[in-house]
Image (cartoon, rainbow, N blue to C red):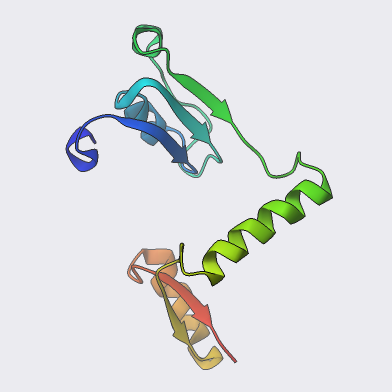
Length: 120
């Protein structure tokens, strides 16, 4: 992981958890944060207390279920505004609805490589 990041990282946003989080904690910079968004690969991860303490790293959990409707709306407006301005995007490929079965197979197998979007 250190080779992939070019060294240490300040923030890891992790929707996977499990083994991925165990590895991610090892590359956190001093004062770095691991933000857990989900548990796609498992509900438990193993962390070394010494690793966390040696760099004053933090492990945080986040859910979008907790904010108020107004706060969620503001966050969504900010993300959509950034996307509309071209500052962020999602790699994707559009397909017609007739290709839904193949799209599901590609996405499930990891073969798609990008998000598949069905457009009527």
